[in-house]
Image (cartoon, rainbow, N blue to C red):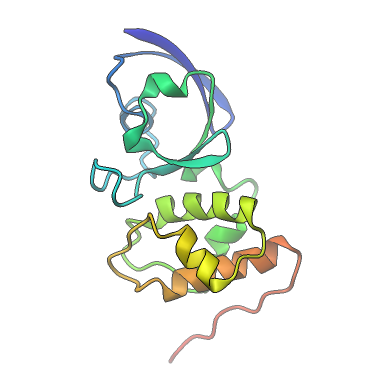
Length: 164
């Protein structure tokens, strides 16, 4: 067993873990933060994406011991006093259907917008290319990221039109 301390969503957690335990399993099973999904266990889908020291990582490819001393943010830690602009964008622009990929997609986009606050459509599509969505066709996800980028820059963003 290895003794590690990770800061999950701003809270220090000290745990004894097996050296082979994956970060995604630490998050879901040891800490009961089930917003981080397990999709493929091969790093192909991105459903397990979290932020580690501010950068998106697929938590199925990181051992928990590698997160020792690191800041980890999951989807549960993203909203501080209200929806994060990306969460709002996914809601307003209908960027989700089944919702399985949504937490990982949002966490990837947090990193994307941190690195590039005003991305083009092509830059957004490239930025999310490591995260799979089986339902949406990605168009509304791109719109959601554009919405969030504008919102984070202080622009007024009209809500999406509802089709009757």
